[in-house]
Amino acid sequence: MIYLDTSVVLAQLLAEDRRPDAALWAGPLVSSRLLEYETWTRLHARKLERTHGDAARELLGRISFLELSPVVLARALEPFPLPVRTLDALHLASALFLRDRRTDVALATFDDRMLATARKLGLRLWSAPSPRPTPPPAPPAARPRSPARPAGRR
Image: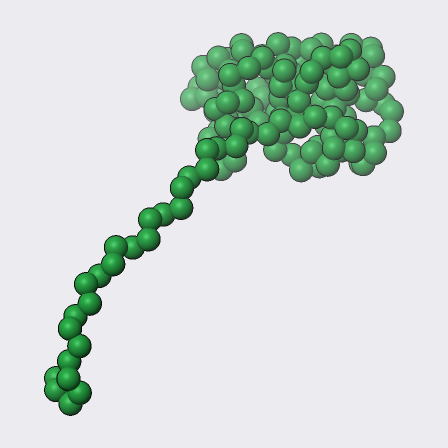
């Protein structure tokens, strides 16, 4: 199961430079209910609800949402191994909640601070499957050599 951070969803919706690999969307997806609010808030702020609203609804409809339960909220109040922002603490606490209940979960995020903290917490991280190695390019075709010219002649 893949736990989605908002950075991944927004990258997909907004066609940013770093977009998740198509393989990410093939499996079961989960996130905190917070992701839904963060996504819509960002789309409204950029006035993109009309152009991106259908895509957002479709994408969000594929995700199972974990509510912010008292257990998750209590964990978010505890210290993390690195400084985190409030919403990141809630996402990390949600992913930890799933892991602690023996759910095989991997965090997908493009946020470097969240990645670093997730590593320190021992959370499994999602990574795109390695593409098939491409064979090295063929050497350039040998060019026929022109016959040698005798010295002094042009």
